[in-house]
Image (tube, rainbow, N blue to C red; front, side):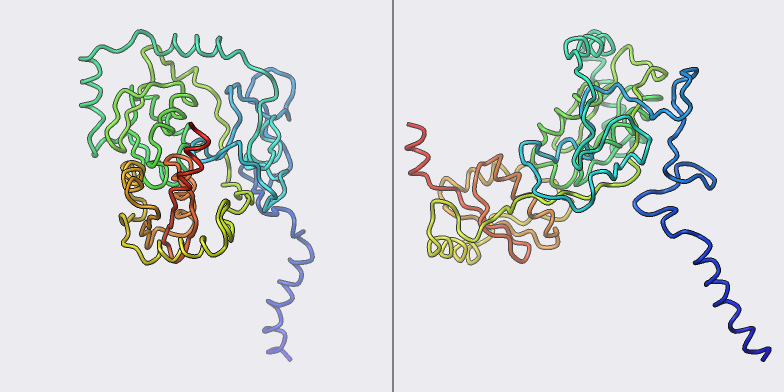
Length: 342
């Protein structure tokens, strides 16, 4: 009898706790807002002192829509559905005065872009002289620099903006190392870094960038950047490759795919590699070849599709197959292009 009660005690305890504590107290993807047992639906206090509103959501004056990634998303492509409800804001419940639409947190009011540009020019100050640029480059360009940020497959993410301003507290410039899919379009990376941070790129070498904060940058007046507490699920977008390519028949599409799979790969891409010369090599190869194959073994299928989308827009070309981490791209119908562009 005593032995039975000893073995059944843990079961009774588990049964008691399961009944006494509600399961949805910290229902994912929400987490406790701060230390202690505060439920996640209690908003944080306002960051402005003396505003008289203790539970007001925090406000950020950054003049753009908040997105998880600024360089790796295309606003012109609309999702067809969502993997999670758009009400699940990655900033947390009640933390921000912007509503999450499933892809972004839009501005609530119009902004004066001319005024914002004038303020940024005041912070940047006069252009740097060649000697000043050389000194900054020599100080921050080396691989052992402690002021470095790594940009991976996510590209310029929202939280990386906060990392940049944290480095700018004690350093005039920050070294940014870019790897993976974003390196296919370094111009896009440079644009969003300058546009979203307000800094100036003073050095660019392959995948290494130096982002300068400005002559009159004041760390105490840095913009408030609300952090994303988790990475939001990517929406479901339209199918990238159809069974039959437009302007082609089913038989012609099949022949092109077989030709691409049996051809010698143009180049082999490595995981989290540097792809700055891929677009130019593909353009040169299309002058003599109709179909190309890129060997992306060990890169990952999700990255393969991102590479295909980038090549489609930058080369341009038509992705016709993603199979076994191989990318097959077609240069398109040249006859139709010549007729459309006389």
